[in-house]
Amino acid sequence: MVAAANPLAVEAGLKVLRQGGSAVDAALAVQAVLGLVEPQSSGLGGGAFLIHYDAKTGAVTAYDGRETAPAGATPTMFLKDGKSVSFPEAVTSGNSVGTPGLVSMLLLAHADHGKLSVAEDVAPAVTLATDGFAVPKRMADAVTMALGFYGPMTGEAAAYLAPGGTPLTEGATLKNPAYADTLTRIAAEGAKGFYEGPVAAAMVAAVHAGNAPGTLSLDDLKTYQARKMEALCRPYRVYLLCSMGPPSSGGLAVLETLGVLQAFDLSAHRNDVTGWNLVIEAERLAYADRDKYAADDAFVPVPVKGLLDPAYLAGRAKLISPDRAMAEAVAGTPEGAPKWAANDIDYSHGTSHFVVVDKDGNVVSMTTTVEGIYGSQRMAAGFILNNQMTDFAFNPAGPDGTPIANAIAPGKRPRSSMAPTIVFKDGQFLLATGSPGGSAIIGYVLKSLVAMLDWGMDPQSAVALPNVVARGTPSVEANFDPALRAGLTALGQQISEARAGEGSGLHAIMLMPGGMLAGGADPRREGLAARP
Image (spheres, rainbow, N blue to C red):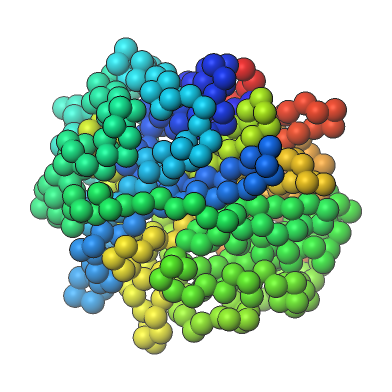
């Protein structure tokens, strides 16, 4: 089964599975098409995290394809006269582009688990890019949104997405031969076809173009390496959950929230006021810790063990009352906690998530991103370049001078909220889930897990459930049950709809009783879950 955000991407993954490809082969196919039909969210010029389950060996592996800061990056590159530049100014500068990691990561995973050739995997995307595809509504709407927020596009991005200043329209036929050439080059030459040669030169030229050039260099690209890591796994009730550790804060925050919630019987409060209040309160505590401590642990100490220690989690749970809201959720002091100032600013909106299960039971849960809508608004060799550098703290220190863990440094990976997750029961695969949504990813993924594991919902019901995000004060979608909202307000929760615009893109697959797979595709996007 494949669950992803666009039908063309789902069909590409299914085609590869029908040809005998593995879950990783299908992941390459899905991503190659998403980069074509959903370029506002992910693509070759971005990064990703992938969690893989090998059904034969039982191994769970995390693949880190997060972008890295170029060698020329500095801690104050987004400051002007000691103050942070505006977000649009930062995004549209060349300094916003981190060294892309997606291609290296997918090729690394393919070397471990691929059955078909890369050429076979990307063939559906090459065909679509060459012959043309109908512009999806979300892609067209995102062009208009980006133009309204960032202003006119320039260079290759303008020519492709808004020729003559006119945004793409839904249903128009669009071809991208440059993208097909890039995929063909990667299939033929491997990582060198992307990180060296004409594609690399095109990326560097795009970053250095205009009146706000960046520092990305050919050497930054040539030396980039994705990483294979241990997944971050912890028990939750009768389950084992595996997600992504640092530099992502997503898996860490989700696992911390669930660790706190273990102290409460959520199954007795299925989608009711008490249940949501418990979820909100635990989530608020985890967000407070995340904002202070999470960063790239290759550069700064991150107290992962302390944050997930059962004794620490039990102490955090004691701060929660089922029938009232706490006045303020503040970061705790877990074992090994360094002194950091909080970095509570996140902007990411351009992300996607998909899940694949192949005929042998191997699983991929992958979250992929260019950071903002159409990334840096720059394009090269047929694909969008990320603006991932704006996921770093713009100021390297807090108001009192205390350093921020997520400050910029050359080679460092910016903090992420992506949380691709796989869940096991009795040693067997049970479900996989994940979502886009910037820092709200944590709330979205948590909702889907609680809904499926504690409230007994099937994947489609779980992902469609109205979203609640509790970073500080909780926010809900406009369609959230008014009675539940009133009940939470009566408990002292300061409910808003401040984040309703971020939008989730949850996709999940679950093994149901009887052995059948059931999928869930977020109705807020254009995707579906389907079998070969």
